[in-house]
Length: 164
Image 1 (cartoon, one colour):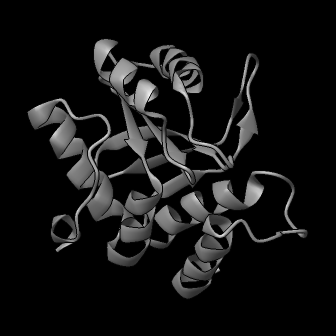
Image 2 (cartoon, one colour):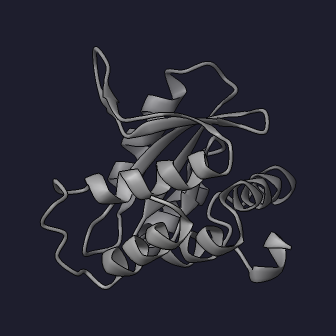
Image 3 (spheres, one colour):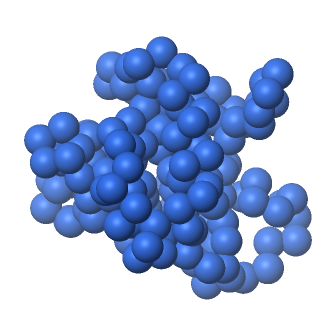
């Protein structure tokens, strides 16, 4: 799929349209990984390790990222974030986790994300994904990474001007 098809797929995912040709959750994983791949990132597609299933990995602009995608009807609570952080922490210290959620994250999950040391996991809300698909996944990752480094914002909400 090219960028236009990915944007159409994103609309279907956001609008909770039926995606009968895709196994549950796989369309969202594909969308995120393919969007980065189209921009030149090295992408490792979903795989099963000895202890875990990984949605994918991205190597781009000096960052090494594990990817977790949640295509849930309800916002993600803190437990999946904490579980993902443990998986990221098993990697070398430079590894970064990217958690993408179609429905966003609960307010308690966001509060807990700041109470806990989640330095190496960045949270991507639906609006972030919409902007990144149009303005560039790499630029979006760079903006989110800068906010995490400079201001300790693990859930920085992208703005259109971040992608110029």
